[in-house]
Length: 101
Image (cartoon, rainbow, N blue to C red; front, side):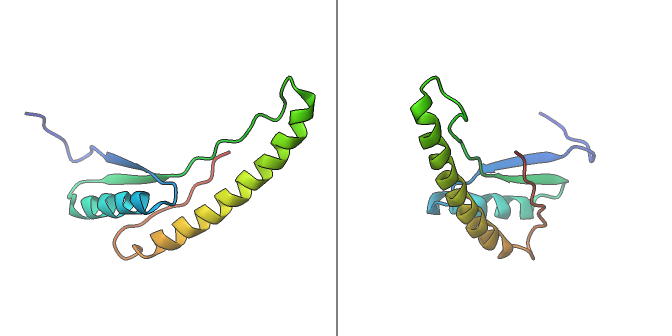
């Protein structure tokens, strides 16, 4: 049997993509955290994959940069929607928004 000390922190990570399924996963994780009687961290992660800035095919570089702009705009919209969704749980859990490049 594993024992945990009061200083142990549990980390729950949820990958989010803005879909209904990821929102359900977030809700489930929040309910789980609300039941924990020990310190925890809940990380909701949203990752964006961009095309490389340069490719061996010169003509594709401009196309890739244009596609990256579209991808970044879509990501901003999705992050805004996820933040709005998460704000509904402000009374249940505390969260900090981090942005990493």
